[in-house]
Length: 68
Image (tube, rainbow, N blue to C red; front, side, top):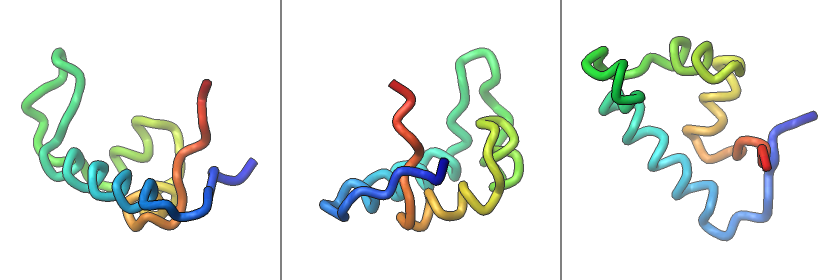
């Protein structure tokens, strides 16, 4: 199933901005702090998607699928 891509009401750009921010900070669970910024490849591996998918998320092209 392809990633969820709603009409752009600003959600994609806000999500992309937050993702880029947290990847640059290296935001991780409390027990894994201090590892530095995320690379696209490492983040993609950690969440189980391709590097291209993470690039699409961080550019605002697509959003992750709703997991609920």
